[in-house]
Each structure stands twice: as C-alpha cells, then as structure tokens.
Image 1 (cartoon, rainbow, N blue to C red):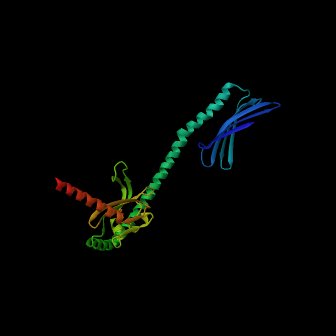
Image 2 (cartoon, rainbow, N blue to C red):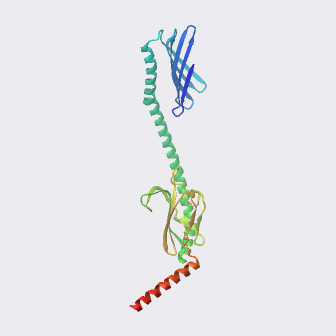
Image 3 (cartoon, helix red, strand yellow):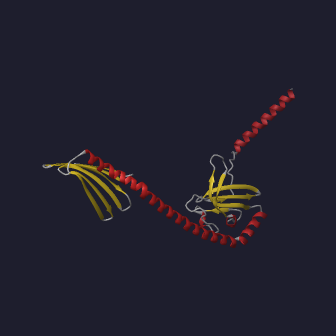
Length: 278
C-alpha cells in the first residue's frame, strides 16, 4: 500500500508506503524535492522487521542517479528513527539557506547587473540615433512651426516621451522620471494642415523617438496651442493621438429652441404688465 501527495507550488512530493509479507513488514516514508531545473533530491526512512532502520538519500541529475543507503540500526528503535527523520531535514535547510540561496542570489544579481549594463549601452546607442534624427529634422521643424504659428494652427510647445506617472489622487498632476526624452521636434514635424495623427503603435518606433525606459510603461505628454489657446494631453504608449481635440457640443432641436423662446417672451410680457399695473 502506498500514498503519494504532490505539492506542485513547492515542487515537493511526499510519500509513505507500507509493505507486509511472510517474513515481516516494512514502513517507508520520505520526500522528494526539485532543487534545480534538472536535479531532484530525495530521502526516505525505512523501518521494519527484520530490516531495522535505514536512511536512503538519492540525488538525480538529468539521466544520472546517485544513491546513498545508510543502515542505522538492526532493530526498530525510537532514537535512530528520530535522527533519520530530523537530521536530513536540518541538513537540507542549513545547506539551502547558508550556501545554495546566497549563491543563487549572487548569480542573479550578477546577471541583472550585466543586463542593465547591456541595456545601458543599447540605450546610449538608441539615444544617439534619435538625437541625430532630430538634428536632421530641425529645418523641417522650423518651417512647419512658422507656418502653424502664422495661421494660429497647431504649435507644439513641448512634448516628452518616457516614464511618466499620473497622480490619481490629484487630477492633472504627474511625476516625471529621468527616463524621458524631449520629442518636441519630431512631434511638430508630424503636424500636417494643423492636425496631428499618430496611429495605434508604440511611439518608440517613430522617427526621432527611442525607448528611454526599457521594460517600463511609457506615455507621451504634449503641451500645444491651437488658435492661440493652450492645451495639454497625455496618452499611453500604444494609444492613438489625434490633435487638436474637437469639442462635440450638444445642440437642441429647433422646435425646442422655439418653445424656449416663446416661454421667455411670455415671461417678459408678464413682468412688464405687472410693472405697468403697479
């Protein structure tokens, strides 16, 4: 008879087995733990007659298996059973907390530092490319800006792209990190006939843009004027942009306007009559 319980979240398997025969009986219990991607560590305690008390330790790595059977006692006694159960657990915890986890943590830290360094070098290269593209756009930027200013069209005052955090507690307040880039020039160059249209896509792919915050949520913040009126808009990275924002005003039907006018006229006539009577 055998019972096995798997704890998937902890990558642990508990097992207990009971065997009985003509010459005696044996009870075996233990645990198996996955310690790495390709390695499993298992231990079990065997108690029975006439086997006595045995401790079995097994390490499996890929297709290789290493077994360490330890015969502790010829008879079933409380002390050997206790130590066979407790000592492997304590030893596993000490090795894991004292050696394995610090080693893994250090390796992860080194890997993360290397990734940051690689991303930093990549970021510098992308920044240089974006700044070079913006320099080439300078003449186009000046021409479009002058045209829009002369006809009081869409003029981009300032535009930034990157890690921008909106404060939900106070409407309109934002926290701007260092992971942003000034994109005033490329945004103004996208203006045609006093309209700015950016389709649904990541804005880091636009000319003169780059990704200043790899792996982070990014936003585009634009301050602009239209008909000499200042406006401000903030959109998510993949959100489309259409400027200027048009106000869709609600217009009352003609018959309702006539009714309101009739009521106002009657009200005014009544007030005049009342004043004349007085």
